[in-house]
Length: 284
Length: 255
Image 1 (cartoon, chains in turn brown, red):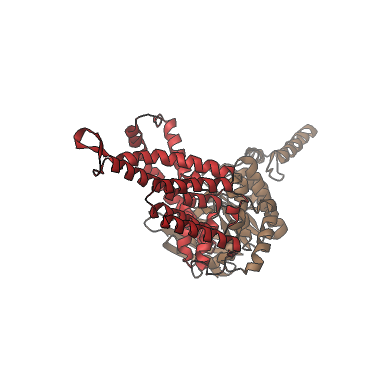
Image 2: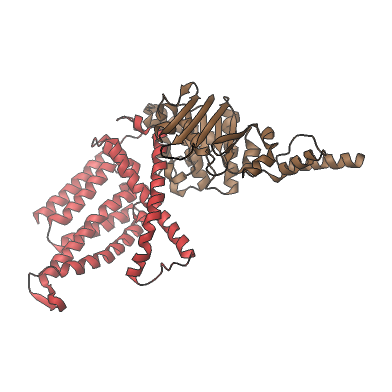
């Protein structure tokens, strides 16, 4: 479980705080999406979770961040990475090897996993992510989506309880992005991993995550279940965060008193909503 | 340049040799170019390089030929420069500004550029037939090089194609804005490319920083010796290959 209390962080030399008065709880097994405009503090929040802030990027740090009971100030990023695995947007920069097998083995070797166990752990993680056949492939021969899956598998192999992803689909096309999110859902539902993902593609978040955190200028503007947060679509659009058009439509219909059912998150649900409204009108 | 340093997968005998054996053989071939003053011997070493590339597979051979062509172009420039600075020997040609071309100058300059080519090719060949991780791991396991240094070497080589790609992207963006990188004027081209070093440097530093964070979070600082997954045993074929290399070196030295 992740618990953040009164977190404020200002990078050394910066004029304003990158994170301000952050209070957030993420329960075990949650699937949480973090969204916000550029400079809202999303990446800094991920750095605060994996210990990069304040250990790598220094500055004024106030408050407390607990990851599975470990205080991120007292624990090193390496100690924290046994609990929370991190995957970044820049696929090429985070790869260290030319072969998938070597890439997978890197973290396991670093953490001193016995040699006899490493092969099994690699197979297990590749199977969890659904890319077992790629084990002996050259990384440069893989597609962007496959490379990102390898990066995620390399983290999953370390058996963290939480996987933290900073814009994992930033360099991917829509189809590959959906594959990545389907795989994350599988990791969450089937293997019980807690997933925290920073993402700009609101449609993906609406479809896959269970909780949404909206950030604005270093603060949490809204946090909660997806439908609860999207009920504030006007405020989200005012701070520059797009919401799906079906949500905007549903909120306007609600405001006009024409609809009071659950908020639709995709076209199919919107169709059901509109049919309900139209049939109600005809009945009247 | 990055294209000359990537690993090309294969099952040839060169691919299967121990990475340390390959490093030793490439070193021996480099030394062979310098122990003899005969152009023919150096040409022979270069031919041996091409032959070994052919053994490693068609793709490796094609790359070696491309590399040889690129080296010849580069060497031509060095040859001209070198030949004008050697003034000993019989004068073959008198040039303006008191510059001379002598028979010794031609001979020495030719040997110089041939040695350069002969000594460059073996290392490029090793990198073509050995994953960089294997080279780094064997340096740690057999030669007891600290992992940080071997990782630095591995990362430096790995980042070359990434930076080349970044540079190509920056140049593409500038071309779209009307910058004429396709100009035939070499000096003008250099003048156009030089300012791009700043954005390249910034994006490179950013990439390196995010790479450093990523490896730190994967326990890089916790790594201890002897924790590598793969082992690199020296097999009889490795001993045979090393013995052949040393025999070749001894034969050339004895000539």
